[in-house]
Image (cartoon, rainbow, N blue to C red; front, side, top):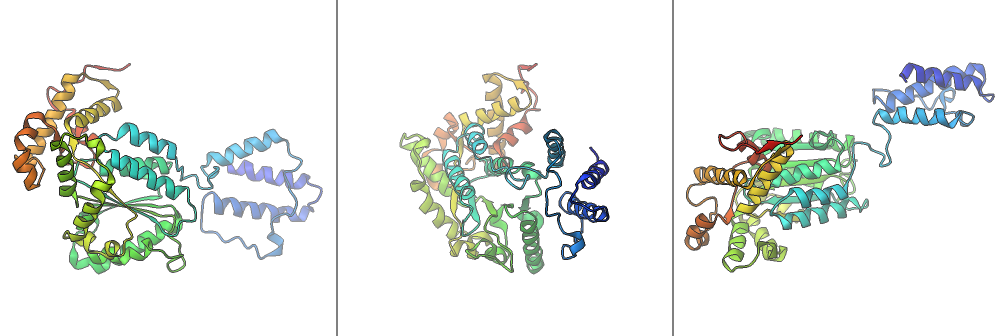
Length: 402
């Protein structure tokens, strides 16, 4: 049903209603046209509701209309993407889906899985939160920080990372020059304000946060603080994610300690990491660590991403093949995992991206021999790393499904 037909329908119903005078039909049609234009197309409109001739009808003009027609009209309106139970069709807040995706798609990150789910679920279920949710993801590149950020976006928003409620900032790309930090401050504050005005539950992702200028983070610190509003705008429903490599050495040291002592990595708890991770973050160089965001204790959760083991890389390879509708075998998965280890060694050298002195002296030969604690190649998510390797010679799938 076109908009023109819809307006004709409004006219017809108005004309048949015995409580309308003929000379008021024009006013009713004008009101509803303005209402549709403002709320469906969100055009620049200012319906004059102070004008008594354009008030909303005080009686239900749909009262005598058959329910079947009302149902069709409702379906047409909802097909425009403006009608849903949540009140904002851009937001889905699918906590069940988030839990499922973290459990089935994220490998080797039991701490991140638990902390992220707890944090997001608690925030979504508490509409009276006194501050925005601020999470800080820590770990070496390739451990899944960007991957988890994408999972969050996919389950909280209808259009995932493409949603107009999601905004990604990459520090060296969006804010490359320290001399322009004052300009960046104004641009960033304006961008955050505009986003929240359009979508109160906006997800802001700051990648490579350790490269942000401290003044830049301090400029947006009020948006993450315990304020009812900032210049008339409330930011309490916004979500801020900061992704950085800070703390990677500490996380690796703890993982190696557990491995050398014969304990399972799944036994690593937040109590083993949180204090040391906070300390390393506070002591590290860079804008993120030196900002008021850290000194003001505005980070709600520090989320550690552990170094991946060989078995986890194989699981990521399996998922990458499955996502393309391909089947594979153990031999091919082994080849992919080995190829990723070669890429890692070419980048990081014999130390393999495990920077601690303890790891170099105690575990180097054993790590090489058994490929136990390993770090994948230089991408934001392991699945992305594996996907890039699927086209290497000799890494062919067994067969195509279907």
